[in-house]
Image (cartoon, rainbow, N blue to C red; front, side, top):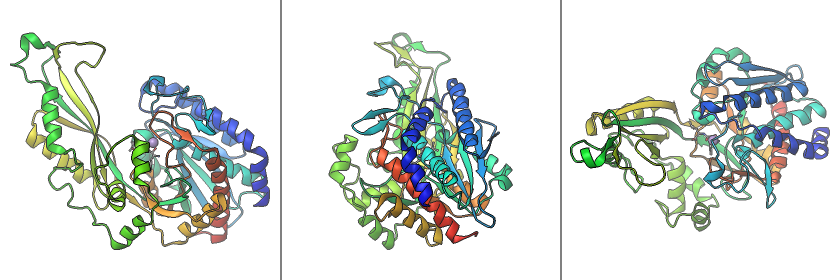
Length: 453
Ligand code: BES
Ligand code: MN
């Protein structure tokens, strides 16, 4: 492992330049207008991996293609499948960025750019760990990469791709680094993710936008109807009134309550960082429970009608809300979507509910040897004992890889608690990049010691 670590030391500056080149592609998956940069980004990665001696090829998904690459390990060694994504959330300068979102900019010793934390920095750290091994003593295990281009839009085509390429993707375990530490200077290992149902609720109005002075009062306003409908679904305290919404939610176990109590979460600092005066619950364990093991209903945005500059007086032709529900064990996406459809049918029969994407919640097996191996590797990378945490975000691939390949999945985050993924001025810590490469090198060696499953 020494030669691999040495390669890291001597090539760190080159790695940073490569990360810079990676984030320069605006690989935004939400908007079809970005098809070209997505393709160029994928080609960049493909070439990057080939130059380092991996075989790489595109995997058709039916949507934005994924990238597959592999390099063999020593005979008899296990193989690890590394999953990550090269697509990013949208970013426009006017959303509040202090520098160009697609130029990696060093600000106060941190790297600022869209996707630098979610997920290009961690993905690059994983690739660099493999490179370091290849340039050092050689790979201790076989490595496969599955790099997706549709994670930020719900991985709509990935499950089919995993099922179709089961043999190609087969490995002894899966490694994912696509989440955050729970607090500053608190290396974390994550064992749980919430699921998600993402949907559109559309309330129809008149055939076209109408003059609200002429027709207002006799034609129902779809935005008002939508507002009433949404108010029947969720309350300002965060509670959800959809029939049966909480029926399958597992109560928090005593063991987890104690574990959550150990998390060094400073609520005042947390509120300050988010720019809110109060949280919906104000006690630490309750906050973590809300974020990690309780379901939510969120409204992400409402379209329709007029939102441009100045006043325009219309009764809009439609109103549409983009909404999602985060799901926790043992909630099932199909059942919860059906419950939402029933609720809408009952309270606003003219509204339509369209499913965008869905993923079930994920819980890893932490009792096996993989989390122990990851624990030791995090110590090598960051010099501190990692904390075992859950997360509230969703990575649909985690469950599909666990179930369809039938192998353990390990979530080894290297992002900082204040990286602000999906927000303006998303950033990544240089020290987390370097520590991450080191931790991943150590983990690959840990896997080799463990042998095939
Ligand atoms: N990296 C996140 C997932 C994440 C973030 C997990 C923080 C744990 C903590 C990922 O890129 C993401 O944003 N996923 C989406 C999935 C959705 C579009 C299906 C999410 O969670 O909103
Ligand atoms: Mn994301």
